[in-house]
Image (cartoon, rainbow, N blue to C red; front, side, top):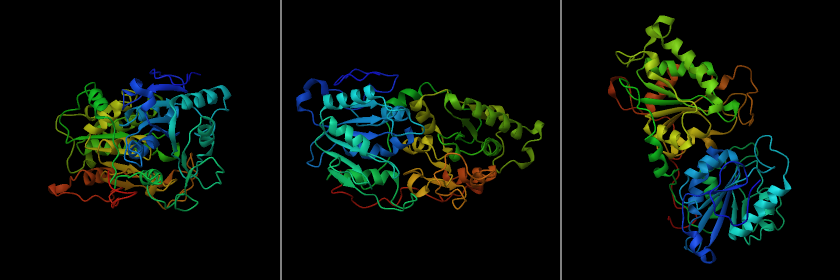
Length: 436
């Protein structure tokens, strides 16, 4: 595993590498004068995106002077880390205390991480976690690297590992305590910094613009484009293939072009959804010809012409470009929901209540939340659905069409639709000092 201390070379591939960052490219010219902060978020892409406003806020110290921000992430968060603005260098590390089924501790890798941190000479290390995670293993490594100030949210006694021990409000079951975006900013505010009163997710527009040029042209003859992402990093948070296919077929019947997305590993799932949806929307297959919505299928097109399989066809920047192009995104509680929010696209959230929507719903964009939030699985944090039949997400495709119409303001007769839920709309007031 690589990890030469102080190396600024861009490296990709294995965990434990230094990656070229997205912000201050000139730090090499005067390392002695640079004041650096390390932000740590050892989770998946969606978690990293939600931490973006907090990472950006770390770029200004409590004294108002600029700081260079490095970002330490897991391999599952690497792609999102490179999309965040305001990051000087990205370090990727597979650690033994975070993630699902983590590998055993690798002493050489951890020593290399400590050496890299010591070489970067961070004056402050800020460890971002979810409520059930501990910042203390990372805090110990920061101390070994000589970091003079370590900040984290911890219910456990930290000893001398934390200089700023923040506590997040909320219940032991994960309810309450505000949205994850605000919780991360609360930790930044605890360092004495000013944080934005109305934070918004963001990604680097230069990378998204470049990726958009490689996208295929959208299908013609449709009322608009909807991206449907049927998978999820946690299986309990994804709709069943049958539900996703029913939603896709209903959207095609209503005249929408539908782009099905997924990672390369999700390609079989997306293909299954596409085949089911094509059969359901094909009049010759006994599909939805008689149940066509108010808009109807665009004249002269077939279901296959409005239904496109793009699984594995883009990297995360390309997916961001596709989501930005879309009128709406239909997705479970997983990374692309937050990526859609970061590019400003409305979301129809098929939200399984295994974690609370008040913490994890898409932030800052018009959002319609579908799914039974009072289902027996609520707040269980289950990775696999504990209830036979996945009842919390047993949705009818017509409900998804209605939600899409609502979230983009399209209603029968042309009336503007109301948005049923807008996560992040209540974030008001100055927090942690003057608004930057």
